[in-house]
Structures are given as structure tokens and as C-alpha cells.
Image 1 (tube, one colour):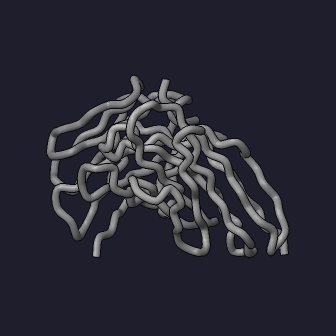
Image 2: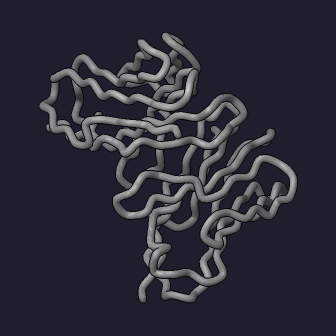
Length: 113
Length: 113
């Protein structure tokens, strides 16, 4: 069966420090991968999606970047964190095109102080 | 701009009461619609989805949703809620069939015994 792993679960970082959140999927190949952010009182906002290795699309302009060095690995990064980067970050995968359902990771609560 | 809106941010009701959560989307083309649920301490998981066909969709745990194209709505219903239905519910729309879901802000549902 397929599983998705996301870590760390919580992270506290100072402003200006770098960020790296990692997400891996097991039990499937060539998944679509997504990074979402959930801000308090708001819905999930799609940040990045990827349909293949090194194929990343950004949905909103921001201080973050994403990379997909391997088929089932998706990394969210920042060189210098801002206070506004605080939030709950969710990785997700789907089997392919067609708007099939997403499977979500457990999320990372990021606090930038 | 394309968006998904949920009518209520917070709902409190007693066990056995009926539940209806409103969801509207703004998009004139073909759209895939979803309801996700997040129980306390758990991952987001799919409750039900609509792609095409019968506009009345039945999901897990006794939930159903009705797609009304003329109203751009996809309301979630359950005739009789249980305490275990306490959770946050998210409506989502896939506007281009790429799995890039746009989420509503979520509705926190609290069911009291």
C-alpha cells in the first residue's frame, strides 16, 4: 500500500534562517506531488505541484521553493525565512492526472520567530 | 478569480441533529469537487467526491453531497450526526483536472453528546 511521510512534525526557526521540509511517498511510482500551506482560519493554499522529477510549478509568488530530486521525494525550501512563512505545511500526492483524490501527509507546523 | 467558499466557519450541534455545510465555487467550466475531513489529530482524508454523473454523491460514514450546477454549489449533508463527526470539514475544487485543488477555509463542526 501507498504511504506518505512528511517530517519534521514541528519546527521552530528564527527569521532569516534556512528551511528544508521533506516529503517522501512509498508504494507508488510517478505520483503527482503537492505542497500546501494552511494558515489559521483559512483553507489550504496550493504552493507547488510537480508531475515529475525536476518538474515543479509554483502557484503563488513567495519566499519558498520546491525541488523534486527523485521520483518520490518532494522538498520545500527557503534560503531565508520570514515571519509570514509561519504556518502548517502539508505534502500530498495523487496517482495522476484527472483530479483524482489527494492523499495527505501528517503536516509540519512551522513557527518562524 | 476562481475560488471556493464555505458558508460557516464554526458549527455546533447536538447528536442526532442534521448537518448541512454549504460550499460554493466560482468557475464556469468543468469542475471536480471534493469534501475532505480532518478529525482531531489525524490527517486530512477524503469524505466524498464528484466528477460526473449522478449529482447526489454518497460518501463514507453516512455523508452525502449534492452538486447543483446552476447554483455552483456542492453542499455536504448528514441526516443524523454523531459525536465522532466532530472534525474540520473542507470543500475543495479541482478546476483544471490536474489535482491542484483549491480549498475552502474549512468548517469546524463540534457535535455535543
